[in-house]
Length: 229
Image 1: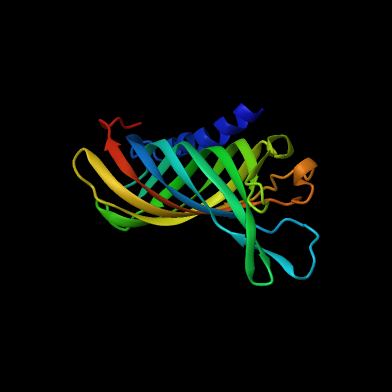
Image 2: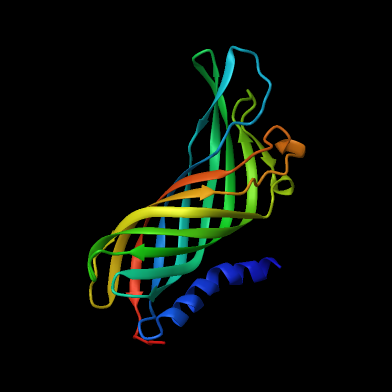
């Protein structure tokens, strides 16, 4: 069922576009990309504390790398569909009054299948806006506690975390088109729609986890020989 859902969300946009614009649709290139991720969860864990102690959500810094196929819909609209390995997560910074008291860091490793549409005002080198969605399989989730005196304590949260996340993507970018290859840079904002916490075991105090991430992505699109459909 999971594999069918992946195929449905990733392949259908390509096949549907081909059906609508048979003369214009073709696979234009292959994209290789990498970048940095600044992410946090949508809310704090529900931990009972005394008034002097408070928690503040902070960003967790991760990385992303991926490969995608680029399809041509028109001179101003492209679609990218591929595979990314991305680390998201969050940090919870603890304070005693205004003094730092350590932090909890959550690392969330995901295998993501993003599908994004790019809208370009110019047909060649151009800034652009993008929008789409991503379906992600959660590979690993763990918490590292930096509040204790004996050093960091790591807890595996895989069994308490759901397997799938689904989210929206929106962003802006710019590309410089050459004959065979096209370097580009993008800023993307990812909004996770699903609660990925089971609310059990170590995550009993974190019953609601939805991901939020700002992604800086850079890469190169390699142009293939045109094969119109």
